[in-house]
Length: 271
Ligand code: NDP
Image 1: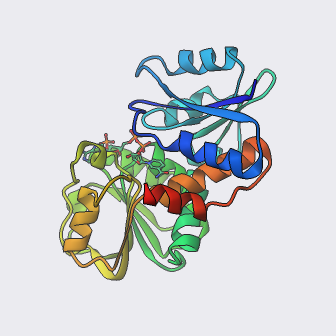
Image 2: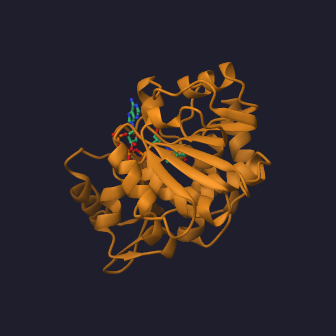
């Protein structure tokens, strides 16, 4: 039987991860199978245990379980520990090893695929959930001038910012506090696009040369990217590149091989 892997989330029907890992496995000649698992909102730990019992070797974790996955892991990579969120499990004999590949995925996409340097830039992150937790350490490591975190529930943004206060200029607040500020890199790490919604953003948010990045991906522009286009952001990107890059990091953790990502991103775009 091929080695078994899965992605777990709720909802999960939109996930491209099975296609991405199938492409990586084919490219590198690995005998593995990868499926999507719908986790009940109150049944994450049970679903993970059931997959392990059935012989699973590893899992990716997506919305809304990344913070719960952090709690469930027995051992953590340093980047998962710093992030306080887990998006990848590797099942070991008796233990669950938790890692977080979202930050590396975002930074690889922004810097290598899109050619945008984070160094010295004013960064805005919208959202303070699992994805925002996951990408903050990697963003900080690439030397931005400042990071602002805005969230519908501002207390979560402030708590998240506070946990990095000794590492960089990181602040948290609500969307109203963004008025009068300009940013070079604006990342939508909320799940608002999943519901076809947009957080209440002031229009003059984009500095000259700004990149608007929506972690969500799909057909056409998300509400955030449509807003960015209408408000003079210079470049727009959806999260497909990040998805493939974070998957490549997870694949490396599981299989010890680094797959090529560009052709996989291009093929998914064509579809
Ligand atoms: P979580 O459920 O952990 O967090 C959701 C966040 O979105 C919270 O900050 C929440 O605010 C906010 N939010 C939800 N709905 C709205 C709304 N209508 N208006 C404003 N804010 C809203 O999700 P994740 O952090 O795990 O994921 C966030 C998004 O990032 C998802 O769309 C996911 O698909 C995407 N993602 C993409 C990746 C990729 O590789 N491309 C990787 C990781 C994530 P509040 O705290 O107030 O509830």
